[in-house]
Each structure stands twice: as C-alpha cells, then as structure tokens.
Image 1 (cartoon, one colour):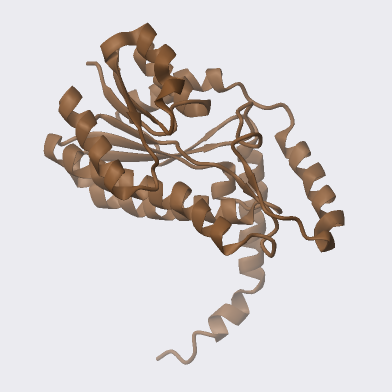
Image 2 (tube, helix red, strand yellow):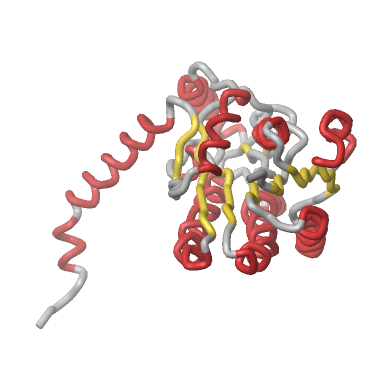
Length: 276
C-alpha cells in the first residue's frame, strides 16, 4: 500500500533524496522547506503527490498547522521524517548563548514539536513510523561541534523514551545515525561561532581529525533504498547507522567507556554507601 510521508528539510540533502525515493515508488509526500520554491521541480515532476509546505520548524504553531494540513490533504500520516537541522561549529567556550539556543530550537525542539503534532494522527490510525535524523555525533562527540553533538544526544534521548511510550499504539521510532556524506551539512547550511585565537592551534588539529573521519564521504542518493527498506520493515530498528564509518567510531567509543566505568567501579560501589 502507498504510504504518506511528512518530511522536514526536504529542500536538499537527505530530506530531498528520501522525498524523491518515496515519490518515485508512488507514495505521497508533504515536503516542508523554509522556501517552497526549492520544491517547485518536485511539484512539476510529481504533481498532486507532493504537498509543498513553507515551514520553520522552530515555530510550534506552524508545525502543528503543517502536520494537520498534511493529514487533511492525504487522509493519514504513515512516515514522519524529522530531517531539518544544521551544524553549529565552534568550541564550547566560543559558542554564544544565542547560537546554542538556536541550535537546540531547530535540532531538538523542531523535531519535538513535529513529533508531538503527528502522534495523535498516528495513534488514531493505529500505526506510524517516526524517523529521527541524528548523526554519528548523536552517540559520540567531537571537538568544535560540541553544541551540535549535544543537540543530537538530546534528540536521541527523547526518541528512545518515545519509542517505548508509543509502541503499544503500533507506532515505531527509528533514529538514523549517518556518518560523513556528500551533503551541504558542513557548507552553506552550517553556522560558525566567532573564533577565539586561544584555540587556533587546536582548531587546526580538530579540522585534521574531522577530515580523517570523513574519509570517503557517502553518496546521499545511495541512502534512498536504505530508507525505503526501513519504513517497509515489519520490525524496524530503534537505531541504525548510514555509511560504512560510524560502526568503527561507535565501537571504539563504547569500548573506551566500558573500560573506564569498570576501572572506576570500586569508587562507584563505595559511593553507594552502607548496604544492609
């Protein structure tokens, strides 16, 4: 059966690729963007199967209205993709209050508001699948993008809780954790804090580490089939990597955490205090 999708940030990157994947196989898509002119070619190609919606996900009332409009137009919501987001660059000390709040407004609260708006529709129909676009930076953390990492960790935390809360309603949640891809994430869509010269030497070191992690960036087009498989799965995963690099990073990170927790376990147990 054809599915109805609601995709934020559909003007470029993963959001655009997944909208095309859904439309090409006969699904319908409510595609959101800050500028709907970026969706004109999709409307010309796919006609009424596309509902272009102008949306700033940080506006909660607009999120609710957009989800309602999509559900009324297509009659249901099968897949909600929270893809809108951007990367905030800057050492933790460098990031301003306004920059930190803006990062969370988009990457965390935007996804939260859209999710909250879609859940009543999905509960009423007894099914649905929420895809939260996180990052390898949602389970690990790297220099010069600490606030971005923090926003994705927050997204992952509420999404894991959400998955348990809505499972009995027939709603599934999948957190997608891409590695490095040839999108515009680090380009024009990124924001940069005012640099502090004290970090100049380390900044170059961090940039070299980031280039090494990026290696051979993945092709966003190649993610189309992967996402279709996820939404068609009877038992989709809570978490899934995209790309061939994230698993190695996660393995090193979690092995290091476990080793450190075990090394300090005597202190942890002693801190429990007296037990009867």
